[in-house]
Image (tube, rainbow, N blue to C red; front, side, top):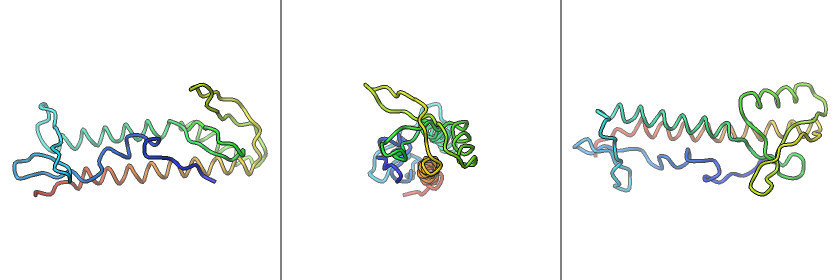
Length: 156
């Protein structure tokens, strides 16, 4: 069963743009609550603002994708690393189709202690599926937030 994540745990990617950015007749960007979105004085245009915000959003996605995910495949919730290399390692372990030692961590006194633990092939598949679900959640939210930035060009 995949772990449930709060927006806070998934990081700022869930809260960057709760609504589309709107532009008033004077070119001032604001959110749906009427709050003005401050543009750095060095930004010369809305396209520069959007470009900067898209880069910031992408950086946040990359940070969150590599931050690790949780899985209860072993019966207790552990933390698994999620860098590209880590994703390839879990995929390789699943493709091998045999039980294997795999590194996972537990939170002890505010620190994550990673150790190799024996996983059955079914447990490895569950870890893989939980990681894929976590990645899918982040990518869908990234796309949603990106579209709010790109489509937020209405004059109101």
